[in-house]
Image 1 (tube, helix red, strand yellow):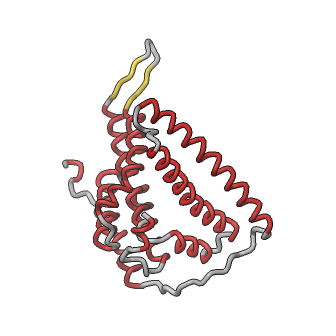
Image 2 (cartoon, rainbow, N blue to C red):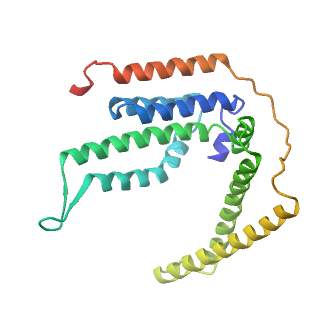
Image 3 (cartoon, one colour):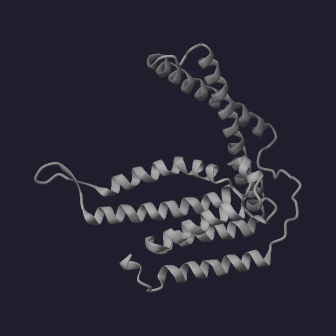
Length: 248
């Protein structure tokens, strides 16, 4: 996702323009009816990602896999009803299926809208946008440090797992379980140690002062903003117009 954001066709667009489009689609996904509103929002978000920001379709669907697991689990928990009287039973009725479908459509629409912003805007630009919005500098710095820590931990996981695989640590199910346990323990210890050293370093430089960096000038595009606003109006009109959606 980070590589896709840096190579996006919208890389040089103002963060405010992309935030307006992405967050506006999120609001539409939350407030409009699941049918057809969420379907329309999903289609618009995917079209903007693929044809506007030029995000590879395979990478986009790959990024959707992890959220899809949580959406599926939530849909199942809503669809299945549990009764305890007069005896314990599990069941599925029409109303729970409808509700599960609505929640799923809302979640997919919101997720694709957030990914539109995430896969077209590098984190450094988002953090700079938060500073421009007068978010306290200490909050922005902590967010940036946590983002960098993710890559350090991922690199540690990859290195340890590669070492375990070279010693046939995953040659059988039993060895794979033991290797996974030791990998988890090692990563937790490393993350704890790195967090402690990071806290000591931040305390040494009186953490809380603003870190000055160069900010490229990316003026907002009035045409992009206008098209986005007109798009929101069209989405609302299409989702609420009585044109026989109930018959489909």
